[in-house]
Image (cartoon, rainbow, N blue to C red; front, side, top):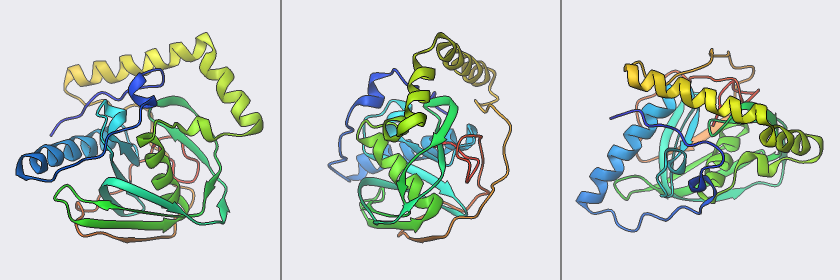
Length: 226
């Protein structure tokens, strides 16, 4: 298991549609388990609440999550959402240094597989639903800033195009790189306490042991970036 560098906006892998996992033979299962373990370690290390494989440069349809006591992974997720909207802001580990109100559905469900090829379903409302939508977007080459509307969209695009934002991204890369090289990991930023609990319902065939939710200033309802 290892902490891997996180790709940031401007990297082509974040704008590419990820490939589905096509086989679950013994060799593939071992590779997938190692990948998921690295993704979880990386997510924890940067105090995130979700991470998709393209965010560490792997173009496969896999994401991991850990929110409000629920944790796991999904391979080849298929997303369905409800009609009711929810309010809330999002941040993203691949778009560091900002967060914006992002329209999402209040309910979401993904169906897919575990690394062993067993069927898995994850569903929930609120923060978990937001995470499922955010991470599935990553697998389709979509970033949360693409979902923004109105003033939030304008502000985000202006910030991303500014020279100052280029410096912000460079600073984050430097912090993560220095920390990785030192063996301390790549955590940055102080944790923020959650402001509201999410209502969730999750059914999985396999699950990693529950760990405390780690937070990073980005999502105002969770304190966690995705």
